[in-house]
Image 1 (tube, rainbow, N blue to C red):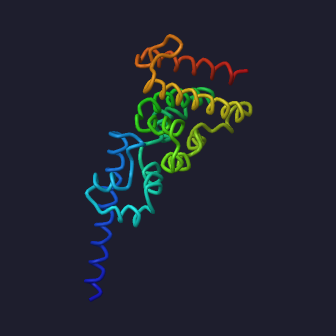
Image 2: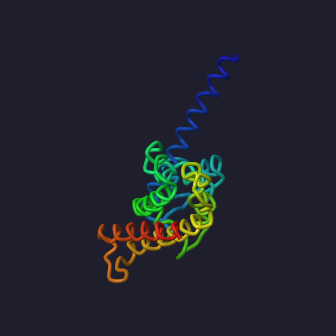
Image 3: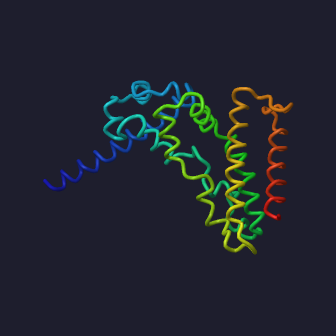
Length: 214
């Protein structure tokens, strides 16, 4: 009897994991297709082919599902991506160059995430429980790369300067990525043109060099 019970429990666990995965995939599909405003319990449940009750049972509702998706997806760039996916090569760089690399990679990472830009735009224009759940689930920008950058090995304390740069670049890249989506002309630049973004990367690198050397 015990073996039968254990087998049923394992099957139930597999079924739940499979259903959760279906719901999460459906959530992302709806987000990319219809935007944040298109998300709803009924819509996601229909997309996943499940009863909407399961969204409440497994995630506590749509906001909980949004938080889970953010925490377990590539919604926000991971530290390994921001350092260039090569920890050994990154560690060989001087501290200032590590910071510079992370900032420039962040610009590319945000632009490469249409679902993230969609959320950022919605958070500004149409805040809701979903956008709040997204925002609350985000790790403080740059927090995860601290172990890789190792500011304590710099020849002087750069902590304040680095955080100033992170917040500045985060805001700049987010704003321009939203502009590219909705109104791609900015100060005479075409934000749909890769050369405009290369100019932005070069500008960020130049600002980082001058600010951290001051």
